[in-house]
Length: 383
Image: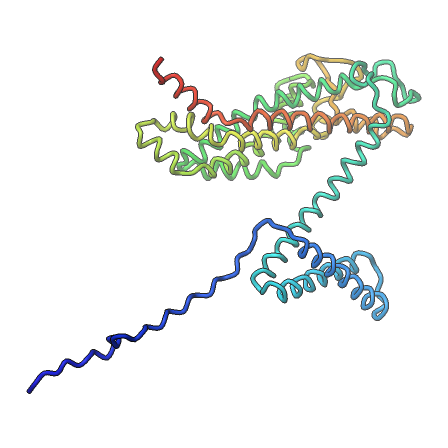
């Protein structure tokens, strides 16, 4: 038999061109955090269309009434209409993304509007009667018939700063150390400690005041003073700082710990020089949340402290005033002038909290790790 050179079935014929492989169709890309004029027009058109449709159905055809029901029906119709519009223009994937963005933005606005109304109303009421003497005088020489601008609240401001400051000094180290124990060390005692911290987070403020009054004031014969108030605020502030600090420490990448341990660092040194500096901004946030939790509490002051109308800058010496107690006392007066003084104190309390939060953010926003690395490089450079 003579073998013949026959080309393989799959071999290309000489001189013939092979067909090019079909190029895959590129998937549409979504622009994250990008709002165009077409999106604004689609949102506005969908909102107007949904409003007109709901007005026709809700008011004219069904004869229903109620602003809340109309708003809910209008919003649902608006979301569905907007989803249909975006799907026709950009596809189903873009429609899901845009609708999710609208829902999240609506939730944010829904939280921001009441907060803005509360703060704005307090500022408007308090600014009208705020005078410089509020920061220099006390209520020693004022009475029920005095004007709103008579006297001041420097004694309440000093008391609030001292009480919250002492509570922060006591609760922040304990809270951060407890969070380090729960996140970095653990063990069989971690679960009971976490359960106790979670239970303390739901403790009403009046129970914290009653606990300090029963244990410290009655059993130990302690005076009703600013320290007793600070201890009650510490009970309320400690779980907030602990839980927030634990969440922040969990966000530190494990690779940083493993790399530092691989270089020969001890567990304490890695925690002190790597974990804590990395989580510094988050720990400042934990402190801010703890302060926000206790700065406006009135119940502990009512239980363990009777307040004062004069200056008492020594938290160990008798009753001490605080801005929450000042507001509670004067808002219950029947005279409008005394109520205006309470609004002034509320405005000052908001300003104090804003100043403290801004200062803490500026301090905690720095980058100590990078700065330390630059200093070490400069020290190692030859002269």
